[in-house]
Image 1 (cartoon, rainbow, N blue to C red):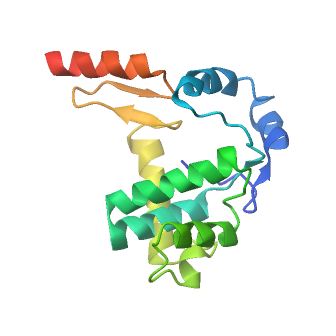
Image 2 (image 1 turned 90 degrees about the horizontal axis):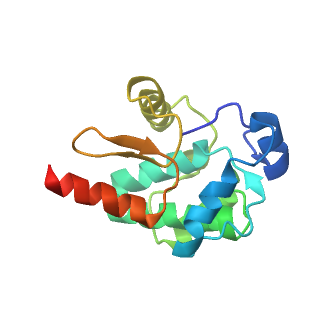
Amino acid sequence: MIDMGCNPKGEPYNAYMKRRWGGDGWTYSMRRAASPDGIQFGNWKTWPNTFLAHRLLTHVLTKFGPASQHVVKEAIFLRVYEKGQNVSDPKVLLDIAKECKVEEGLGEAVLSYTSKDALGNQVLEEDQTAKNKLGIDGVPFFRFPDGTTFSGAQPTHVFQRLLENQKKK
């Protein structure tokens, strides 16, 4: 999900949370749910504009495949939530690409803030499809084969129960 209302350079965490939702209270349950799995959100300083990160992820999926895309996505999350870095910055994304060994073919255009090329169009179309046709209004978002959907971070036991229910169907 891309918030195109977010400053292209990202915004300070507290300022964005206050502007968008009146505060960050909605994150408390997410943080509690993630903590047993070792995810602390310990250094979340910026609310990034994720357009460039989505461009990078789309490029990586096309050129290197889903396994590499997963590695890059994990690196993006680590940088935002635990290392306090701003993935709206092309330099941070380039460092991630190098760290994940997916910088091959990563021209300057991939990390440019434009939607006026094929990659930008694809990213925006996929974002609009998710929002308008699939009804996704938050991340993470999960859809099971039987049509069950939910969004938001959930404790491990919720996933276990849902997966058990899917096996029974």
